[in-house]
Length: 557
Image (cartoon, helix red, strand yellow):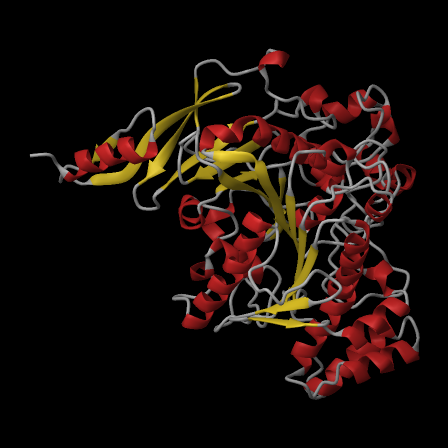
């Protein structure tokens, strides 16, 4: 009599066309849910695993470039390739994620986590049939370009084998250099650089992953001509840059930007000047000194709270006149030869079907209104708006209070909506308008308006988010509301299903599912449990912010 595990293994052979199958036993005759599988990629063999529970394959911690340490710090990634003579020997164990890139812990920035040796990627696939033609989606994580990783499945912020199975998509995520390791631009570092530039190393890492995908994804059952890049927050910002870079031609075919920053115009010369405090903090006056810094020395030398304010802790608040944060991606002359808007208008960008999304309360990550117990919530709200926007002028603050009256839902809701509109949503409308005017491909716009059934704590944070918080669209697509609300309600499930249907139609066909969702500016979709299509979102409010110069105060990084 054939045991259950043996039958399971047989069907894995039959249906998945893999080279080996090992079902391990727990002593009771039942499989332990994992099977080792091996695949040959361009640089050698890797061993991942098939999950019986998730019905998908995982290959984690695949190195795609040499460790960017020593003299490779602040240099373009050196791809692992036969032509470079730096492939691994033997077999790579790809069953555990690679190192997180070195960074402050975003839950406690006094703690440091990760390692400078961090250029690894992950692949999840429903099949290893090389004749399959699943689309591939390449995920770029967010985190201000300071924090995060492509390994964050434990907090629901990454793809998974289950997602690959459920959607019939091959997913790739990556770790790319962050903070000063990924984006420090210094004139000293131009000397000896193979590109003759400095900065944007994290973007170069992302491009290297896209090259790896083009070469290798056929081995994972994927069509290399159906690549969609998608990213949230600074991951979306990265795609904003990738769509303008001359280095990304033919590397992706669709793009989905979630909550991206629309401002990216800092020149290399400006960045060199801005980053002089970093150089002063290191005590270095030559390149050798910079390379000899420990990774801890590098992080501690970043000007977190002095100009150019790398910590950027004001971006979830109303702006103060004249106060701007530093830019991490820059127009360096190599990755970006011109600012993205200019590249698009000049026909130099990646003209591919694009979907650009926001959430209605992007700023809903903290308590914004300083509390004075002697005042009512409405009075506290009005006082805060006058104190901050009054630094521009009284007409600005009073008009803002008229556009966002405290009596609608609550003062907390209105301040979050005001900050979200000013800092990101209205400027993203402008970004979408530029793209739709410059591209021949369709460009779509949505605002996710769904609020979870309970206050939730996304990204493993301690704060409680209400309303349509930053990232609610990502958690819906990943199907990880159980990480936020336990158990997810019927409303969460309906939003997840609606949102996935819209996005998967775009990934497969280049257009959302809803037939009345037209390319921008003809319509904007408000996505919740159902998709409602409108001619615009907060049109009067956005006209006010943009006409009064607040695009310059939109999110950066």
